[in-house]
Image (cartoon, rainbow, N blue to C red; front, side, top):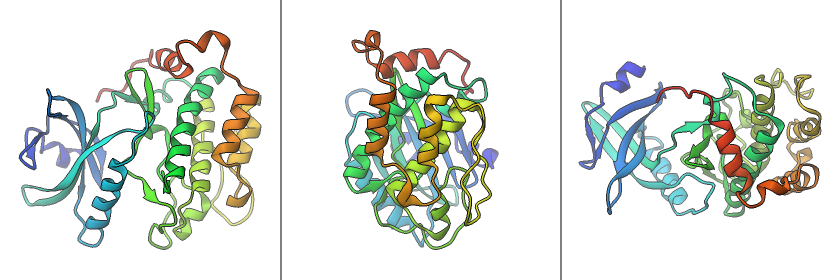
Length: 283
């Protein structure tokens, strides 16, 4: 499917956004490098998805609402709309360009406990803000924890209103909580996805679970001790028994406080500088 998307390199979306380079995608979406800005063009990313007549307006509405959110740990959405490339009718959203993400690091090495702590802090800040505004992230995974310069940010193009249904029963994705199979979207689901991401970041392995009604996920034995209890509280099958974002933040500050030498530069800056020393996948 990548070749089908790649053919649109060099095209212009909505008379404004030149598709400079195909960055990646799947059967249902593609991301290109483009430019955006009224006062001098800057790098941006543009995501294209097929315009499904049944939910195109809902998706555009979600993007418009997400674009109104403003937090230093969230990827900004600039513009969205409909377009046509050849015979394909598409939706597009233009957003901040992130040069790398966590999924590009993990094939090379796991995060150290210090790096994991520095990854959690901005992710929790962003989730607390999103949940406080009545939204759910719904797509938390390593590929959606991104780096822009020395700042770590969460993607925002998949946000949903709290209480929305994902549309009945569906097949679970790797980082989805069990209740997502019933179409349930909630902050507790984000906590599950954060737990899955944390375990993978620390061990390069995902927790093992069969998606059945009983039993908790089996965690890799190599999860460092400070994080083992946290992962277990995030990955409770019962959403009501999972820790909240506030509880995780309190645990982090109490159990793994920021080292004194990081308080001036900021833990996230130090983390970003340490983490992105391995070659990234070419984008």
